[in-house]
Length: 119
Length: 111
Image (cartoon, rainbow over all chains, first blue to last red; front, side, top):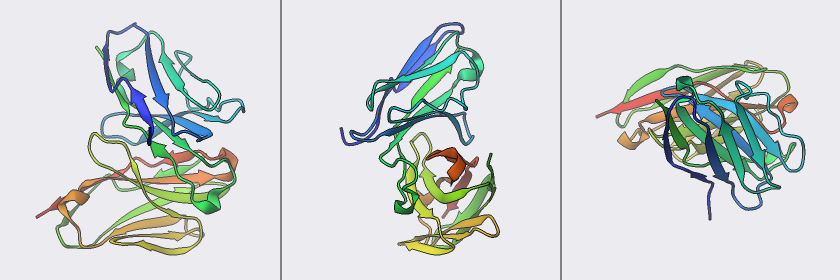
């Protein structure tokens, strides 16, 4: 497709269950990012994939969170043993630029997000 | 790490001009971005500054002063559809291509 897609668009789960969120980046984009956005708040960085390099997991809030990416395509974010505080919108973004192409103003393109509600 | 501050909320009148400020502290500054996010939607890119000065794009302009760690987004001829959150984000050399976002400024445009 033309843009970043994410699935599911909405997910309601019970506390303690595992959930898996999927992101399809723009074709050819080497960089992929996951963010979390709680209601009325800014974006919280979770994890960053760049090509075949080891991912930057510095933003993952706990070991219940993990993410994988197959090559330069699909990524999945998994949350194990979900807690109510995990309720948020999970946004995926991709970009074509590898550091340091900042002078081109390479930007990130966001998907529509997955709205997760943990009951 | 980076620290980014912007006002939480602003209100302005249709047809007026509004300036949304963003201040940041970072090492290895490598660009500042502004995004617009309508309620329930994903952020969309508005502007990018890496050098000092003003970048104009239609009704929207963005200014950067690297020495002051300061940027603003200027919206002219406000329209009701401009009601949204405006996110300031900073990129730094020591953080690869990652962006660190501020909390966003929720702008309400009134008739």
